[in-house]
Structure formats: structure tokens, C-alpha cells
Length: 502
Image 1 (cartoon, rainbow, N blue to C red):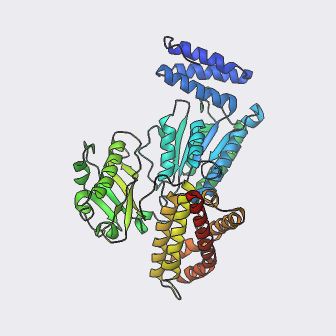
Image 2 (image 1 turned 180 degrees about the vertical axis):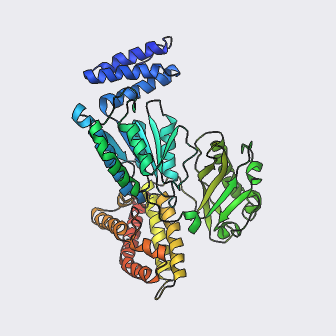
Image 3 (image 1 turned 90 degrees about the vertical axis):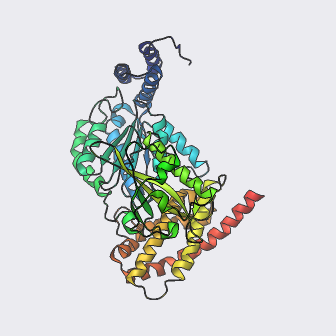
């Protein structure tokens, strides 16, 4: 209903309150009244106040909607987080109101028959609370940061953007209005206390959980914290391709020279990209001299500069979609502004952490997401067949294990960024029989070989201990499933291409 713009904020809130009361229970009316009073006390523009009240009223009358953003590799953690949120909400809401929270976990709740990007946007738009889980820096987090940025763009006083991260993982500093909590039992205890055992977690809403539920907090937070266990080293310490760019106070990155003159204070594994060793220290322009020689090269540099500009000016940065050819023939890369390093006391940016992901071929903008995921997974399976199974036959050495670890992490980073590690997206491209086989293989891989929750799968232990015997055993066991996927995915990819072309 159009609003009379001549009305004061208080009058417009009264009108919104009158509409919200329709169909509300007596207890909900009291909370709606409290929400109106709390929002009216804030210094908000009329439009902001009305949107905030309407979002609070939606949660009060219909139940809280929650969105959990994470990477598939951390699905055990995300599902535990979801279950605890439901449990603490239902401790009161289920008995007292008959309302259940709607908790959407991003990589599990997708409908394979619909546009997954539209689904995500729709669910994020509905959410009152958005949780960004960052348990590990080892995997690309570009997409969860995008989801958080999408939520932030329409965020009102009635909504919360919360990041829960392992103490060793940098917070996503480019997000405004972000509440950050380390994954220690004490900080998780504080978070759940603020959400479920205090008033106004949603403006106007009474305490969500009954006090008798407090007795479970210590036990539940210890268990939840344990799933953030961070035993693996950060990817930058093992095989990640990255640079650290020093930020100089007053630089706004409005022109390309701002980036070209920025000092490089750390880097690793960029020989193929820039023909530079890890000990290189100089300016960004000096670092990239070997690849900055054509219009295409300058495009990715300008896109990265624009991302730094956005962050410095408190905007959510866009992703860098332009890749470039490395100094070594056959290698292509795409940069990602991975995170920021800030001074904890002044909150001033000190460094930009830029990761370089290996790419093959330019991204084609109109390829369906599931087909892109299939093509990426197929390409890395093909490479695995020749670069792993075809290269490391017979006895392995500890150095061989390290090489395979680096290959695996490169593959996981790119496949993850394109949806290839999401079983729902990838399996959606297969017919029913192959789909069941693929889902079973996914489950077996993350149960036996790569256990993100405990880091004690067979491959995890082989990588961590440089155990050549266990690595050989794992490769021999995984070889049949890799061959099956190569055959099934190649056939299905050709069929899908033919369908689209026809």
C-alpha cells in the first residue's frame, strides 16, 4: 500500500502497526507494540523505520527465517549449527507459539530443477538472520562472501549479519554491520545467549528460549566449537598462490598507478604466473611485468584495482572475472580479493590478501551453472587420470605426497568455486541411475577419505603425515571411482551439449 509521504515517521509506524495487528495473537500484538516503540526510538529515515518494523513483524508473526552460508566441505558443521538453532528456537517458539524457525543451509536446500542463483537470492531476501561460517581458510570463500554481501545490501535494523570464524581465520572485513564471533566455546556461548536468552534479538521479541534451556548451553557450545577444529595449515602456508599487498594510508585506488606502485610484502607459489620466486619483494607493477603487455592483461589488473577501491570506500567488491595468461605457457590465472588484514585497535586496513586460482580458458557468461560445474569436475578428473594415476605409479615418496596434495588443493579450489563439489548441483546433470552412483561416491569420499569435521580421513592423514604408503593405498582405492566418473561425465557432458545445441 503506498505511503503518504507527508506523514511523520511515528504516524507511518502507527499505520504499519495497525496493519500488522491483523491476525496476530495477543502475545504477538504486545511484541509488535514493543517493536514499534524500539524502532521509533532510533534515528532512522521514515523508509528505513517502516522496513525495519515490517521485517520485525514478519519474524514475530511468522517465525524467524535464517540463512546459513558455508562451503560444502563444511556441511557437517553447517548441519549441526542448523540443528542447534532449531533446538533453541523451539525451546520456546515451538511450545509457546506453534511457530518453527525456517533455517536454510545454502548448499543443502537447493531445488535441483530451479535456477540456483535465483533460489539463493530469494532465500537471502527472506532471511532475518544471516550466518557466515568460516572455519577454515583452506577453501575458497568467494561465494559465501558474495551471499553475505547480497544480504547486507538490504539489511534493516531488524536483521543480523553474523560471522562465526575460527580464531586463525581472518574475518571478512569488507562487510559492514558484521557481528563477528570466534568459534571458541566462550564466544559461542555469548552468541547463543544474546540470540536466545535476551529480549530484542528481533526488535520487540521476547526472550526466545526458556531459561531452563540454559543448562544445555555449555555442552552444546563445546560440541559446536569442536567442529571448527583447525588442524590443517592455512592454504597460504602449503600450496596457495597468493600475494600480500601493503595498503598505504590515503591511497584510494582510483587510478591504476595506485595499484602498480603498491608494495608486495609477501607472496608464494607464483612462478608459473609471474616467473617470480617466493622471496620477491617489490611493487605490484614490478611483480607482474612479465604478463602486463596487452589489453587483456590490463583488464584483470584494472578489475583487481576496482575491487580494492570498493573495499577502501566501504563497498562490497565485485569479483574479478577476467583471467590472464601466466608467464609460463599453458597456465592461466584469475585473482580473488580473498580477505583483508586490519589493525585490531584502529580497524585500519593494513594488507590485502589476493589469491590466484588456476583457470583453463575464459569463462563463458551464458553457460548454465550446473553445466559449468560438470565441465570443471570433468576437466580435473581428466587431469587426475594423467597427472596423478599416470605419473605416480608404484612406490611413492614423501615428496610425491606433497605434490599430490598441492594438485588436490588446486583442484578443490577451482571445482569448489564453480559448484563442482556441491553434490546437488553436480548430480542434477545426471540421469537417475548415475545420479545415485555419484551421490554414493560423494558420501563415501567425504566419509572415508576427506573428513572436514575431524580432518582424519585417509587422504587427510596421508597429506598431514606425508605417509606414502597410505597415499598409495588411497589412490588404488579411488582409481575405479575416478574412471567411472570420467566415463559417465564424458558421456553426459556430450549429451547435454547436444541437447543445448539442438
